[in-house]
Image (cartoon, rainbow, N blue to C red):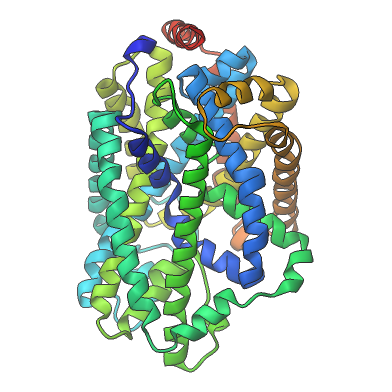
Length: 506
């Protein structure tokens, strides 16, 4: 696979759709509204915007430039910087492997709940329905891998769609899928938000969401939360944007594209906050309780609180279909980008063509996902793996990558020069300061803050042995496997990396 034969996006719009599709995922809908509400409401938007401008967009630009300059996925791109740095790229690949395996099953839940919305199958007790009837979850973590059939079937569908899109290619598959999915997501969620803000009590919910608590601005934990939200929602730190930008044309506006993708993602998060809290306001008014008693996030918001709201809402069936269809589409666009990192990285380093790489690498990822997560113990495993791979996988990998690129290898100036050749918005010392100083400090602070909480008490009350195996073991395992993969003599892949780099320098 020579550099001149490398796949390319059909247009800048196609790349932006894919980048936005990767960034806009489940966390935008079920994480941002609650994080903002808990950290000062309207006042949270100030540290959030600062975080976007001083860490989110600068990191996006760095990853876009790395991928574009070396026209390679993370392992090869970091290899071209320094041979030892290749381990960072493979570490990011292994993080993507872990995330893809469990992320797919949440999309499968969303597919099923789209169908459940038609007849409100969860009945009067959505929580019992979710954990006992639908997930058939064991009360405590268990190694029992008994399959739950009503999860297994939609999970197979998720993987067939994902691998089918990836097999078609970058332009014909990923780009075309995102050009359909992203407008559809905006339309569906836009209709949902319009319906939500017309509900009785919606104003109370929006007031709770937007009312600023200015004292929060001086609280360090609020700033940590702001940087954390930006970091997790932009799909940075685990190789996706390096991979996607490697398929850009020679003359591509890197900094401008990062600005568009960053603000588009944040705009959708704000839209999600409006939709979610307007809906929660309706439920609070209906139940005669304060909004803060119903505000929640994550699985509890999507699969417990929202079904209860849908059951008490006029025309709730349509609202439910819109909400869970939006979750499904947002999840699929993100999953496609995550798996592309795996497939593209192996293809770059081995010379495998796309379809064999999809079948081998994508098939292995799907197999692990299918074996572990649609089971009676799957929800406990998902919960712990998700927590640890995010807090101690993505964050640490990003921190190491920024320190290596900016401090150890001193590559920010060369990357800035490369980006400025084709970008409308020119980079300068401010970009290097944000990446070399502000971003490492905030990522380090996030990690330290999280680690203190982790050591104070066991996450969600799980046992030490379960957290050690499914949590710390998985997070550290991704690092160890990444280092081991970097030691493999990828002879064919080395040639590919050299050719790509030489082509860029011409």
